[in-house]
Length: 298
Image (cartoon, rainbow, N blue to C red; front, side, top):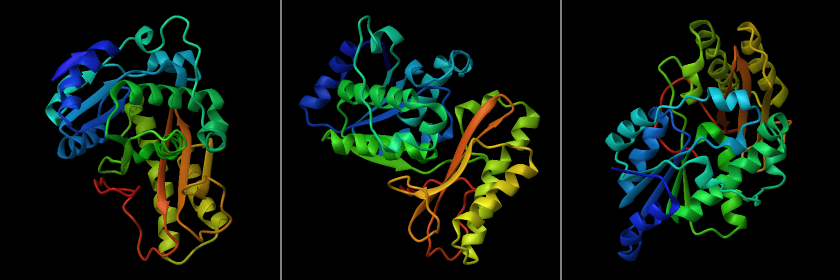
């Protein structure tokens, strides 16, 4: 695996593959790789001739400088994991390479970004996400972009971005990978102290509580949200939001009468975590939000 620092190096490295008609897969990350990232790299390895992993902590999507500074960084370790999982190229540019002096352009998806994370973190968060993803797609020009379902709203927003701009890329979203106890894998988990780590299990527990109600026939959004809130309260976790929304439009639902996303965001100690599950009105048994999984649900 080669590590590249500039857009020119990346394009030069991909030119032979592109000329030969080889397929290119892109796995964008902010580093601190875990099994969720590695599952994306392995899927890309199965499906593509060339696998590009990007490692860039994007300052444009952070609301607080302190959060940006605390974000875990371990490039050498990440490079080893990416290579072992099957990456051919690791693109790890500087901030100046991605946002050179005089940079004055932004890409924004309206509507979808006003809710959930957008309502909590502000418009600048998703503007930073969609701008950097657009740049990475233009730099790499992959056939397939691999994303993780844990960032469910981000997946929905990027799908809209690609559709609206007629970008020639397929999107494959793989489901959240979890620890055995149900905690969704996240680079931020490394910042949890033991007490916060235990309390963080309330997020997946809240999702399971709602899933179990759906399996028993409950369709009232309020009942599902109340069940999730009760689990969070039991662990003294005060969420930024718990929302049941349409899985495509993110519109709030009063009843589970179509496929829906149950999404949670909550600070646990000093670390803000997100989690979600997809609920189906025809489900007959609880899904496995407390178990690791590798099948695609998006």
